[in-house]
Length: 483
Image 1 (cartoon, rainbow, N blue to C red):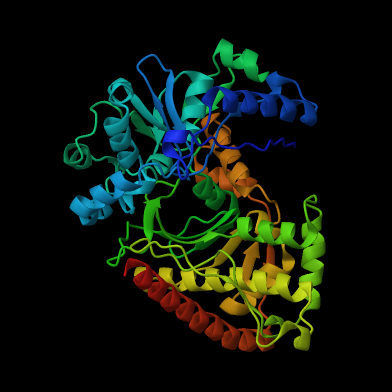
Image 2: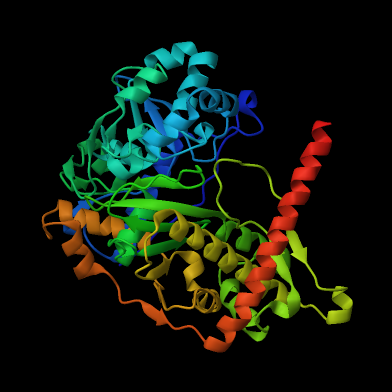
């Protein structure tokens, strides 16, 4: 019915510069309260018409609370202060940690951050009483209840992915503080109601039901109706998360992929993430058009459709890549032209289309990894998120995969999935499947064009070959620097 949003930025304290990031929980909570109030006002409703409230958030982000509920640390998924601690953990326990949690490298996850605090701020470390994902922290702020939703906690590196519960082996192995893990619950569970303080701060009615949501990508799968084994959902936002639903946890023997929990009970996800996607496309927008509003994306899409498939031979490598969490290194990238641009008359429409093709080539390569590792037959592909608003991108993807793609043109499918959780927790629906069937929007079905599919098969091959060449060149550069 309405939406509200604010930009926010992270802080880099001097002691964790240049890679460390954190945020002020009081400032962020104030922003959240403001946009809740704004969304209510835009919807032209009264607060008592809101049946329930829920929350989703980025994965890997985490908040530490003391026993009195005060925030000791709040950090996003890009806080890399614990690089050394993560490398140390992986050198000693990496394979076992990956088998337990389905996630690596450890510097991205909570155990490494806890070790950083133990080493650098022992007095703060001793006060840590509870570890929460960002959305679970929002639930706490709303209701006063400390719980851990299973999809969120499976992505902070403390959960036995097969058992869907906190890993006692991990706690023992890494000597983590006892009692820091709250009770695990599932998306769609009502944990209480808004406290009087939260109601006053947000403009919600006192006693509004508070329902647990989930991780942003998994809520996006729910919003798109991706729940059955073999279905693939692409959450094409700032990053490009390609997730396959599985009926049991599947662990990649080569440690390239991530394994997580689905919000639907008895389902897991196997993930091959293309990395920075929408972020890279936004960079290109700024480079070509300067600081302009989001309406420019529609213009970019029109320009891209004016360029031919394969973009006159231009290849882009500006962010998205094939996931391999066993060996992370900065990669070489940019635009590669078949000859001097002035000779071929390369224009911005070719750069834009090449960037969209870059996204789709990376999605395809990660999709292929899911097939390889899972040994499952793909039962359908859906795409949602900001990039799914590009009709050109979705058509390229369909042509490249050689199959129809269900495109969800509502940008905030993760928010829709979170609303489904609220609907279940408030009793409107009995379970998430019912809510999904009732609330899921009808997607636009995009069919592949056989002629373009054949052309893209060749272009994709060139992209893979060039990507491997850039990777090898990067390795040589690192070898020379080490010498």
